[in-house]
Length: 89
Image (cartoon, rainbow, N blue to C red; front, top):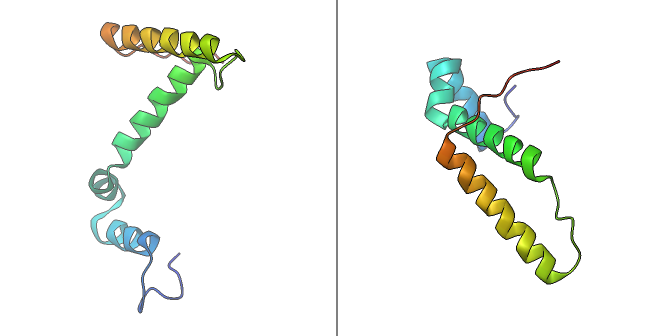
């Protein structure tokens, strides 16, 4: 639904809705880069699943080591290609 100020001062959301209305949902997603953004979000979710959402160690040196190890794991994942995700439930 468009905002009340669409005619005078359209928001970014208003412009996106108008573009989707004019070009269609799929073309609007392609134009806005939605599918690329969704792919990046999916990849980040996979990485967080492997590495966790937060650092586990408290000391600075241990955190540096933890981050360096995580970076090596992620680089190795990229070298091997994107993993095939399979729904299990």
